[in-house]
Image (cartoon, rainbow, N blue to C red):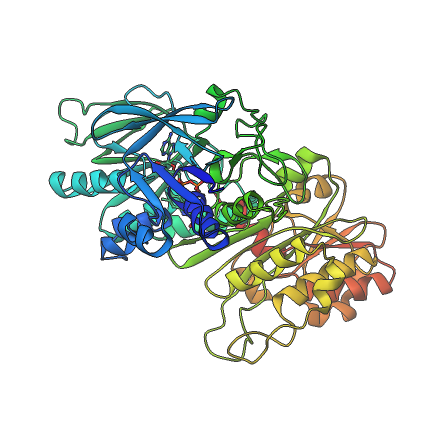
Amino acid sequence: MTKRILIVGGVAGGMSAATRLRRLDEYAEIVIFERGPYVSFANCGLPYYLGGEITDKKKLIVQTPERLAAVFGLTIHPRHNVVAIHPDRKVIEVCDLETNETRTERFDDLILSTGASPVIPPIPGIDRPGHFPLRTIPDLDKTDEWIRSTNAKTALVLGGGFIGLETAEQLHRRGIVVTVAEYGSQVLKPFDPEMAALIHREIRKHGVTLKLGQAVTRFDAPAHGEHAAASVAVLACGTRVPADLVIVGVGVKPEAGLAIDAGLAIGLSGGIAVNESLQTSHPHIWAVGDAIEVTHGVTRQAMLIPLGGPANRQGRTVADNINGKNSRYFSTIGTAIVRIFDQVAAVTGANETLLKKAGIPYQVVHLHPNSHAGYYPGAKSIALKLIFSNEDGKILGAQAIGEDGVDKRIDVIATAIKAGMTVHDLADLELCYAPPFGSAKDPVNLAGMAAQNILAGDVMVAQWHDIPALQESGAIVLDVRDDTEREAGAIPGSVGIPLAELRKRLAELPKDRLLLVHCASGQRSYNACRALMQHGYQCRNLAGSFKTWKAATEA
Ligand code: FAD
């Protein structure tokens, strides 16, 4: 018998499910309801159209209903809002937004790919004209039109998440003077603070004002005599920031209202609860994408991880299961990437915050290797952080920031996490190498080797945030960089002995105090530690050395 499969939401997860369904069953009736005017559009590309990097808006619309009907035999209803699900009767109620008429539609299986909606924080004045989220093509059109019609010169981006920062970068590209206001103490929460600090540096370097740890308490109309902006954001410290345009980018929440009203199980995070088949609490209702709660692949905790890759893969999984293929979606590890001006920041697995919350013990290494062989022109330093289990060496997470080669290192480590690999495996990976592309010991190998050294007890490390407490308890910070490097900046209270002089000057160092050794990036200080340990000194290598400490502690 012909199956009737209804899909709510016609973008990432919904459309991936629909096309896979068709490939698996030529005879199924596949009907998609989408509230907005477009299906299958590239929401990830919206900031880049706003900034002018993508110049042809049609490129954002990956497929049209007509083409999807012709190629895949899908029935698509844009501008149709699904308003209710009746699981017991296996019907939904749909409102045609053109005619305002509501009808019922029967299903054998129903897929919810309703996505997430922007959080609009309850700040007085948040609904003033000129304030926009950036989620859909209509949002983009309204924002673009506002910029043109008001000749906007200044913008405030509320929220320093991925979309907020991409939008800030693109507005700046368009010649708009941008302020990013972030309530937390750092942007990009999936990164640990010392890594996010590198992004703060990059944002400020390009002339974007970054207000961290500052709540916007209200949005006012401009006062008499004040610049005639759309709004004036009033920060907790009292500073008034006028803005011709406000982008509201404080995050998203799952669009789970339909599921809640239908009595489907909801997870603690507010996302629709699904099992590994992506089946909701009703056997014929499935859910995917930003609307669902997933299991974090490292911490095993239930959480929301709204990303395009998982949504697309989940769509395929559900289509398989509806066709009896017994496919499983086990977890999401949060692999993500963003470009902020000249820097690329990528992350995978768990960060320190998530690991602490889950009570998982871990160890950290920081490295600053080159993107490719240092002697070949154009090599760029990558700040690479690897987090691993100090019990069995299992890889728990990684973060990288740099101008070049960041994506491939994080993708390799993401693959390694999914495969359950350890730091020993990373050290042993055979990766491509020729001078323009990498190094004979790739940054990923080096990260694995640095972690192996710790696990083997060849060296002990301390983190940048351990310095004050260690100094307090009598440790000496030993800087083994050259004098010229020290002149450009040093850790307060540190003692300088260049590595090349260390063996001759051992007598200057006490054996009864811990030496916290650093250089610029951690390589020379590791060599120093190995020598010192063999001469009977107690020492620890400062992870990431001066570069990481400087980034983490600069204002
Ligand atoms: P969506 O793709 O959002 O689709 C949900 C659809 O359901 C919506 O079109 C909505 O109108 C429709 N809908 C909801 N309720 C109903 C209803 N009751 N009736 C009918 N239709 C309904 N992810 C990345 O991994 N990398 C990126 O670089 C990236 N950049 C992004 C940039 C922007 C500006 C945005 C907005 C998102 C970005 N994302 C990115 C996130 C990614 O787009 C989402 O994770 C992904 O689209 C989620 O897929 P989904 O199918 O769950 O939801």
